[in-house]
Image (cartoon, rainbow, N blue to C red; front, side):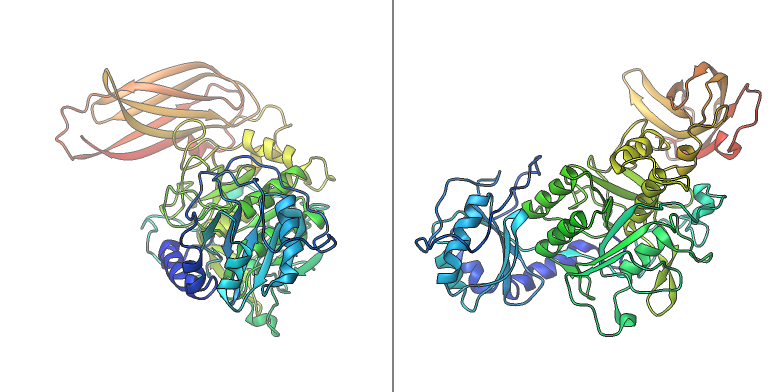
Length: 544
């Protein structure tokens, strides 16, 4: 999700108030006020249900019966629609879905669209009581939130004053200094967004599916989807893409106001799977759990299609969907210092982080913009997965295998190991491409922090071996306001992470006084370090 001036939470609250009257109808809310409503428990692993033909069974009594239900006890999920006068119904099983199909033709409710693999329909109605009568015997839940695709605007709100953007240097920062023109060849990437319009920086689309009608003039299209596509596959040196040879599938699920609903999003995922997509990029989301989208994500996982989703841009620890669903690769944002950005959502569901501040990107009408937020970070990860699958020498890995490799070779950041701000770390395509090159020396200081233990306060300094050779006798020297400490590690295996515990007595420093810790690595190796800049690190602290 790309960062906007206002938090998504107020937007969702406004939509909630408006949608009850517009999409669901104020009367509909009253009709179902006596039934169970509200958020369900956190998503559980589930499998999609296969639905049979919707309108070929004999007529049945005009009511629904059955004992099957969702995990939260509800038997029908009513979801907000992005279209006025409509709503979306999601059923927990093929049987419940078929029962509805048998009775809808005898009601005053109109079937607008259906999604058989996920037991969902889009319907319209003139009187909410008609829908209430149809679902009279059902226990239901009503969900009002819609998924949002932010615009491209970037302000200073919530961004650290010392944060550094990427501009046109994304590839350089990632360490891509070779010909990448054939990266991603044979990999199909579905971009579920506002649509990808023709641009001189982009290759022709492999496929285009419009679940929402586009404007007559492509220049009037919300450019969010085009910007996402350019980070993946642009061939323009001003806004270079990571995998220019990837096959892009544009699936327009959002109108130009940047709003979509659960039906369009789920239908887009199904369409991506049917189109043979290896990876689905979703730079959008909301904070309300929908079992319909969860089941669509499960369908993609079942078909070995990876979903990469933006974690959100509100600086919250709340789960953002679809990023928080099982099997989805959720992506947070860092700046060019490699630091977590304050606006980037965090939490136990976060999988990995990638560049996401002021990245040069294409925009409709042959324009270019600075694109920020986890909306930018997600396509970076999508493209790196595609490059891992196909690096110009032919396609060698499946998407799930590429994900395993990307995870294993991520740069540790923050607390050692997976954490809520960086997930498994920061993507590093250089390590992936050089994984079979022997003898690479690459050590890094990844984190410095003070922690309180039962013995007092100690400094923890974490290092990582990012090369392809074991590091012998690595010396760490730490300069503190109360003296210098030296510690030695006799051996650090390839990929290994090690944290040094260093007692630092700060009692002599007046409370609140700022001070600096500088740590330096000295390697006893026969070759120079690949990136010597990260062998030293300075961090500022304040005395307790």
